[in-house]
Length: 259
Length: 259
Image (cartoon, rainbow over all chains, first blue to last red):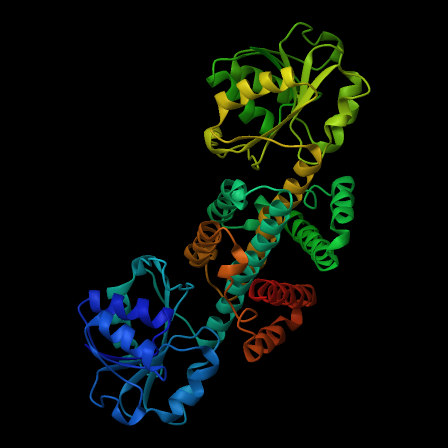
C-alpha cells in the first residue's frame, strides 16, 4: 500500500516505521514543521512536504497522526475528498471527516509513544472504525499486519477507552511522580520503588479486577496509619487532598467488591 | 539462626519460606489464629503455638510480622526482654520496642504480599534499622542472605518510604480499578489496557523522574479533551473530582519540571 503520513511526531514516527517494516510504501511525509518532516523522511528514505497543495494525490491511504486538537483543521485542508483517510486519536470522533470525505475511519493505537523508546507494535492494541464495511476491511488488513491485537470500536467507546487510559496511565504516572518526590526528599533513589510498582501493575492485570487485589491502609481502614500519613503531608496540601480522595475512592471500591 | 516467627499471614508466610531457603531454622510459628499457625507450621515442617507463654525462649531472632496496628500489643506480651526482636512494618517506629526490650530493630520489605503470588525475595528491597551497631550487623547478615537490595533506614525515612508506596502502589491500583470499570462499562476486557499500564511504569522507572515523562491531556493542557472527559464523568462525581485534582497535580508537576 502507498501511504501518506501527516504528522512527524512520536506516533507518526513509530507508526511509519512499523508500516514500512510490514511492507508498505510510506511514499510521503507531510508536516507543518519542516525540520520534523525532513528528519522522518530521511529516516524512512522517502520524500516530504510542508505544503498541503504538494501532497501526493493518488496514495491508497492517508494517515493523520497529529495532536487531537489539530485534526479538524488538518482535515479541512487535505487536497482530496475520495481517498481513504484515517486519524489516530482517542478522543476525536470519526465524524470529524463526515462533512468533507467519502472514505474515512480511525486507527487508534492504545499506547503512549516517546521519541527514544523502542516500540514493539505487534503488542499494541489497535482500535478500528470506518464509515463503510469495505473501508473497515482495508483498515483491518493493515492493522493485522502491524499488531496481533486488533479490535473494532465505535467512537463513543473509543472515547471511554481513552478516558480509562488517562486514569490508568497518565494519572497513575502523576502518582509515581508524587512517590518519587517523597522518596527523594527522604534521600532515597526512586528505583527502590521499582519492584513494588511493577508488581502492583502485574497483579492488577493478572487479577482482571484491580479492586479485588487492593491493599494498603485505606483498604484495611487502618485509621492510625492514615492519620499519620495525613500529618506528614501538612507541607503539601494538594497531596493531602489527593490522599483523602483516593482513600475514599478505595473504600468505595472495597464496598462495591464486597456487596 | 534459630528464628521464631510471630504472625502467619502473607508476609510471615513468604518471609518464613525465604528464611528457611536461606538455611535458617524457623523453629516456631506463633499466631493467635490456630488455623493459620498450623497451616504455616506444616508448610515449614516446624511447630507452632497460640500462647505467648509457650513461645520458645532461646531463639536467636524473633520476627513480629503482623499488621501495623497490632504490633505494640504483641510486643507487650512477648515473654522475654533480652533476645533480638524485629518488626516488619513500614509505618511503625523502632521505638515501639524501646520501653521493654534491650535488643531490637526493624526489617521492612518494600513489597505487598499475596497468599498465592510467588515472591522472589532476592529482588525485594529490605530496609533495616537496629538499636545497636551489633544488632544492625546481625540483621544485615540475615537480610543480605535474603535480598541483593539491603538499605539502612531510620524510622522517620521508613515512614516516608511507606507513604510513597501508598501513592505509587495502593493509590495507583485504585486508578487501575477506575480504568477497569470504565473499559468494562464500554464492553472491553481490562487487559486491553495491559501494555499501556506496563509501559507507563517501565518508562517512569527508566526515566528516574516520572514527572519528566508525563503525557496526556493535562500535561498538554488540552482543555477540549479534558472538558469532554469531565462531561463523560457526570454519573461518577467522585471520579470527576479525582480527574480535576489529578489534572491540577500534573499541571503543577509540569510547572515544577519546567522552571
